[in-house]
Length: 478
Image (cartoon, rainbow, N blue to C red):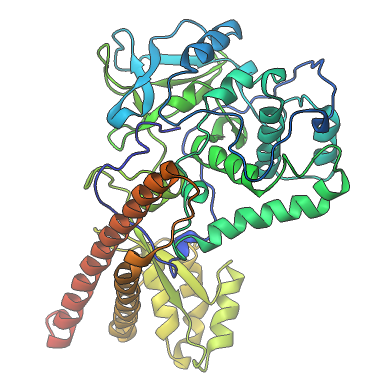
């Protein structure tokens, strides 16, 4: 998804290795219905009977990310499979990428797309190799690795798969940071998370059923591809109990921070639709929202950052930690753990400020033994689980709490500065000139993102210093 938006729109925010946001987190920004695909399939052959590939060859499926060569075949297949006549069509948009543009005038408040349930790919979709699907489900494989394996299985079948026209339209090398590049230590946790998911499947299932899951097909290369596709295209179906799905055609829509509409399941039409929140003239690109995400989340999953200043949801994660030398360390940790927190937590900081939860965590960290009766209250507020929402304040330790936040903020600024200084020596994981160009492109995105996130921290630093200065001069106390 976001073929057009998956481009360098200028500068903005990223994270060096210390940043907590690189704890692997898959988030799905569109709201769609969960639908069960029940298809009778006649293909019963095992995956091992299909064409295999080696780790050193280019994937034999998919297309270039900016290619329209398979667009007509995709649209014809979708029409034959039940997609009604459309007011939008695939075309090249910004910087030569793909997107959906209006073919006719589209009014504000109009429902469009109407993708039927039969065209959704979910964990309930029938496998062309039923035995392989049965093995995975017997092992209670979670939805994401299950769908990743399903996508590889169907892709390897090529023309024999019902989804061949859809898979042919998918980018051979998605613009997800997980797939395209290795930038120094920028994404170690996320990349290793994907590797761990694959290693778990290989150990528990693939190695025990090599006739169903040959290593020439089911390997880390193909797994990274399928995870890259899922990261950038999978949608979260809130209206259907949190089901996730790939929605062909709808996943060609790109993101705009100026749009608030999202995909959803419309019970009256029994299809995935979205309601426009603005009018579109013929030839204009049609947008949806991928959700309220920071620029780093957009970069990680979709490979783009919005134009500077357009994303009001942008933030940077600030790591905070209890001091092991604290005499009340165990007592404070116990209070935090009771509310699902740990000795090290991360909270978002925006240009506009920081959340109450962060302040509560800071209060807890600097509170003396004499305030032990308040530890529970502070931990509850830090976890956002407090029944009573209030402006939690402890004037006697507020100065220490703000200084603690400032110290953490300046520590992060220092690490960002070190990362930016060393960024010129980043090693790119490339095997071709095309990959090198994209690697440099994404490397620059990460550096620009990091620079701008540092600006958020500098802004927080300024606010904290000013507030502490006023407190120490007696202005606030007066």
